[in-house]
Length: 560
Ligand SMILES: *[C@@H]1O[C@H](CO)[C@@H](O)[C@H](O)[C@H]1NC(C)=O
Ligand SMILES: *[C@@H]1O[C@H](CO)[C@@H](O)[C@H](O)[C@H]1NC(C)=O
Image 1 (cartoon, rainbow, N blue to C red):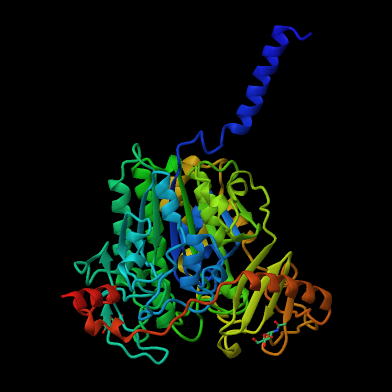
Image 2: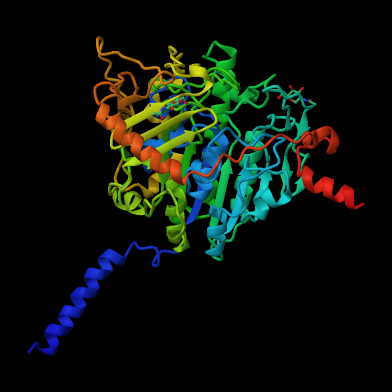
């Protein structure tokens, strides 16, 4: 017989034991605020974090050094599909978004039966805000953010708008519409900001939302989807303000200089948002995530001089230059911080992760392609993911797929125009780069987050972390065998060959067949691409000079 004392002791032990493992679970902490800051078409090699000495991005870098830097964060290859994957937790092949983007005059939106991230978070009591770019359809009001779980939207509905006058000129790909205005506060045209710089306007809106929020009452979700450094229009694509241009005067090429100034504005934005969270004393309970929707377009449509070098390819291609980027994430909740992680993360993983931290479990019954990576964030536990279906695009005719260190590519985009190692440049070093560590440690983000650091960080730590983000191509002179995915499938061992230089398809035919089998399985679950013909009634000239919910406008005209 056990004595009562032993039983009590056992119960006590058990509760201590459970307590240890329970102390950081979601139920115990207040639902954390979630802030996602997304860049648009930012080159993966254009942050000083990744070794670029040309453009100093101390705030973004500091976010990573104070938190976790995911060095293998995968997105989709273009804007719209990346946004759909982020907000649905699904691969674009499962939502019909696998080909191109929703065009300005295309009468469709992200399917309405998809439950999106703000809808989950709203269910958990969050106040939900999007500031900036939507790009998931606006032909009807029902497609727009405030009808889909967001309490507010200040920003633009399409894929781009110019940085001072907020018009978008759709005169590419054989289209020839007049410029139309695209900037809204919820469903109201918001034109008071004309003449002010878009990146600063969005930052001001975001920090105002933070200042106006009552953190004692509700948890807060902010999706700050910057338009920068995406080219705004095909005629005058890159736009910056003089103050930012001054900080990058060491760059000779005027386009690259303007791009760099746009990235400086982005970095400043990250600094201001984090400072606003600090001033509101919200940092203790906030998760802050930063990444770019895809790699930079170095050449071709909307090229912005951005570089993903040494990765192969660029935006809108099946290669790593389109898909692989950095994510920096920070929170006091993480038990480990200040490290560079090589874990495989996909953009679809954020929805289940954030739904989980919000205490929502209904996502578990949905067929998501993302995994909850909360224990990776808390404990640096390896995620369960070992594959990514980057895309199957039956219209362009390409497939890009990763499994267990191997990458398979068949077919490509733009007739192979983007299949090279683009964006090599000799960086014109910023004068500040010689005191890089000090610049980082004097940034707003560092100052705000360093009081929460898990250990004392010195300049040597900053240096070491920065070195760990470097991508080594392991060039082998003789083994150089590029491939032509228009002729036959290619296979790369990404761990040994992250720059996709040595095609091993002929050497590993069995592996190619295995991967093709798995791709066939994905094909069976694919829904058809949702692309539909353009509707010329979207023309801004028929809609008071606006890109707007033209189908609703037409219906009401018919009724009158
Ligand atoms: C708006 O800005 C763009 C540059 O992005 C410029 O090309 C265009 O002429 C401007 N439109 C107006 C109406 O000022
Ligand atoms: C590879 O892509 C080409 C071009 O899209 C296509 O015709 C071919 O069937 C694909 N091969 C395989 C094995 O999927």
